[in-house]
Image 1 (spheres, helix red, strand yellow):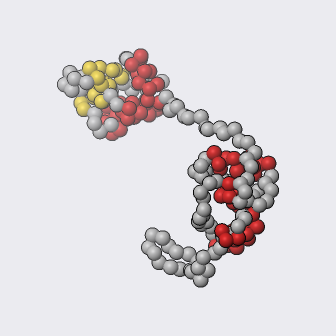
Image 2: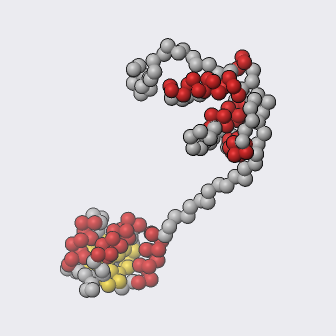
Image 3: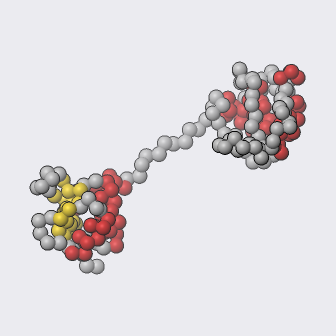
Length: 201
């Protein structure tokens, strides 16, 4: 495959900065559209491109389709590796989950995986998202957490309207102290409230 021009890493004598010099009519025409900050060099069909991460990305994208003869191979490889190196990712935090024991306020029996879910909630200090499959006891695990964690009462449960009766029933069933059991407040309130506008529907 023919080269469409040359690419060289040079110290530009006007800007006094290290830059990329491209030669070749087609290469100059294309890179001028991709990198508006580029400026013409001293000779015909020569352009100077500032050395930046974005410029290297645009040069690489152009060279994937229209190869250039690279005159500064080591500089180019160093810049490409630095620009396209994968960013380090943090390994996921793995908690060693134990089977936690529910607090005195909870009445009921958790399955082993629910006890591990309770341990997860306790270790996350409430900053967690419990996302089990349907029917695996997210409500029960949440109530167990509320009854186990210190100073959690009062608790506000925000839930879809169709689940409110279920929450009410589960609270009565699994949380001790009748005076603290949950109840649906203002049952005559509208079913939805648009928070942004404050309009009721």
